[in-house]
Length: 524
Image (cartoon, rainbow, N blue to C red; front, side):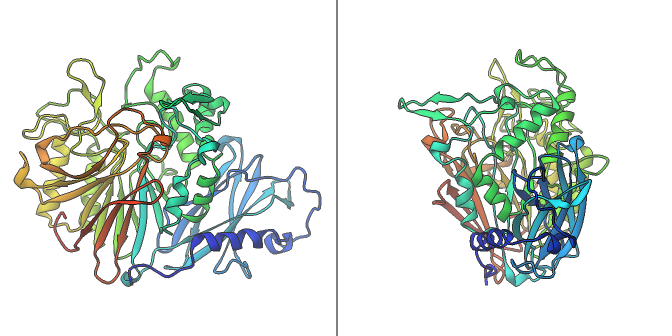
């Protein structure tokens, strides 16, 4: 059996939504209802789940006013004998958002949940429940795993266009009934204001929903929060969030293009030039608008490993927070690199501890694709590869250390997934083609954007011997979603054979490329 035969999430969710209309307060809170509906908290931004494991998960909601968050879970959509979870008080300090951790969940089961928002001063007054559903990973290998990934949402001036159907790529992903979704960064474009209309090359008009916070670059905490709220105006995304758990990472556009710690901006659009100030505000808004298991830790880190049962561990990287400054990146020594020493040590330690058949490394930037920062003279480097095909230099040194570690520790089943470059491709890395040879072959798959401008292909750097096996990218820059080139990827792990199949798909779900990988190989 390659995948668990659960009912499709769409039919489950429709039933849950219908059932929620009949809910009464005694079932939810055990007290008599207050009949006046006016003034009750509302959850107009939907619900989300995140970082779901075999026995736990996080549920997110936003209220329109102060409220107590209450979550109820059930094995059935009828919500008979629900289990109740008391969540936090939602207030202005978190922009009325909150997350409740669910523990002790059964593995490999469909979980139905509903979120109620209660008046803090009168718990009898609750708003209309908002329902969702998710599956916990199975502890049984034979059940298989399926997930999707992509990145880059509402970038380059292309926002929610009702005439286009909004972010309709989310419906295509939901149709595959995935266990979860990895967003590989650029969840928002805080540096990308939206205008009400844009003239397309064929003379037609792209129309954006606009908000005050999307009228300029984000600088204040309120403006960053407004950027995250903007995407939740899209009904496709809200439906998807209520059906599919997410694993979220961030990249640069959650703050501003190509940022690095300590940078002082020269961009005239900004009155606040200190990137560390902007990044702190962005991180707070990011932590408020996504259910991420590590962000409430004192160090507030994004990198983490999410265990998905015996078949899969997902290693979520943060190539933004701990990097050194963007430069020509050709130095012969580089202890900090793009991950920072602490994160690199963590990754090596957790990879060596993993007993999962597959170790997916969710990277917010590609390894062998040259991503420049600037265009004047010899540009600075934004990602890892700097265009010199010889021995590792700069940030490549850290990646070489990691690849060497994987080889010599004989760590099997590593696969790299990323987005960032706004096209889709598959690269195979092979030491026989490389300048640096002390590693085992592996694959890197690129997908995206979800709803942003599409761009031509980046050049390859031969340090690690990449071969571009497949690519689909436009020949001109910033092609709108109406022009196509919007992509997501699917990974399907068979519970019987352990084979991992990657499919690169267009926004309507059409399969462009398929690669089947065999388990048990060092690297891959």
